[in-house]
Amino acid sequence: MTTNYRSGGKRQHLTAATRNWRFSASYDSFVVNQTFVLRMNICGENRQLLVAANRYVQLLPMRNFHILLIILLIQRCTKTLDYNTVIYKSAVKFYNNQQFDSTKNILIKASTSCQLSDSALHYLALSYYQIGNVDSAIYYLTQAVNKNKEFEIGYYNLGIMYDSKGIQTQALENYEKAILIDPDSKSAIYNKATILYKLTEYNDALKLCQRAIAIDSSYILPFYLTGQIYKVQNKLDSSLLYNQLLIKRSPNDPEYLFHLAISELDNGLKNEAIKHFSKSINILTENNPSYFNRATLYQQQGQFAEAKKDYLKFISTKPHDNESYVRLSWIYTKQNKLDSTRIILETALAMDSTYSDTFLYLGDYYSQTNKNKKACDMYLKAKNLNNIKAIDRIKQRCNN
Image 1 (cartoon, rainbow, N blue to C red):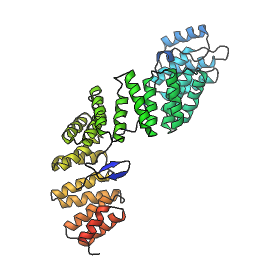
Image 2 (tube, one colour):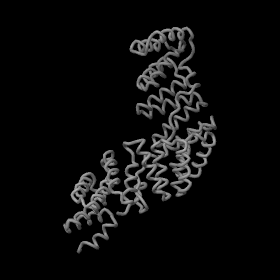
Image 3 (cartoon, one colour):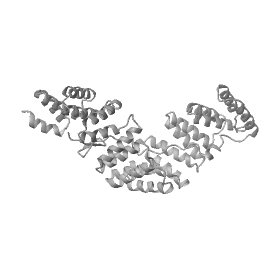
Image 4 (cartoon, helix red, strand yellow):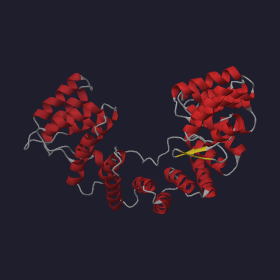
């Protein structure tokens, strides 16, 4: 059985098939709880109201009557009497407890009677983002950065929001503004690099990764992206080096172990790849694409029992992956378990009738069981799905 490498939907005949992790040059996470953010107030200043509010906060827990208190205090927050830190603290507390709707509701209510600060708008935007309303999140965070042109975290998070919508130009612009305010913002520098990676501007992305590493050599994400860029550029030894550096900094991350194993496989280091696929699996036993890739290597080495175990494990978590069924059927054929071969292939065919290898190997099954007409029908269907191997099978085994 010829193994192949799946990349970007195209199939190129190389040494081994692999399954990828979720890597898509994803951005670094939101910045929320910075000290200077938490020092910012929602409204203007009124010390007496602040003292009264804080006294009640000390006495009352965060339950329904606390929420009623907040509502009462909001009602007193007017343009002239508009300082109310308890609202801000309560909103932050709700956000930190992942009660995003409550955060949003408190701040929206406050905005009806007083003007929200850039910090409060920031939390309101993040709350909208967390509940899936990205457009409203962008709207309020844009208000925040318009209030404070030096709001580096605001620009950074605004970049993430645009990035999540695939609006790369706006994302890039906001990351650049964050970097102008704080040239040592390693996360903004890395996130800008991910945009350039998506735009295939690999050399500029590499420069940014090196800049982020120079700021903080323990920051692992630039090592991760650098390894991926070198892989795309077919600089496989450099990709391996950065994946090794990544593992030195994060030795027990199953995803990074997976990428190291893939890099080792790219460099022909199959035994090392099996070792790191295995370590990845030991750390994360479910939903791990390492099972598929380790199974492929076991299959190449003739360790069919081990390969079968891994394919079955992979199928248990990815039950609609047709190629896994086809590979498993090949192992059953090698073990002369032809009934199992047929059952597996028919299961795959029922799930997806567009995967040509399913027809090809069903044809092989029928050929082995002397059902030549059915075999040729299967080969013809595989050929109609542009399976090149089916053409040879038809020439060798079919009369017309």
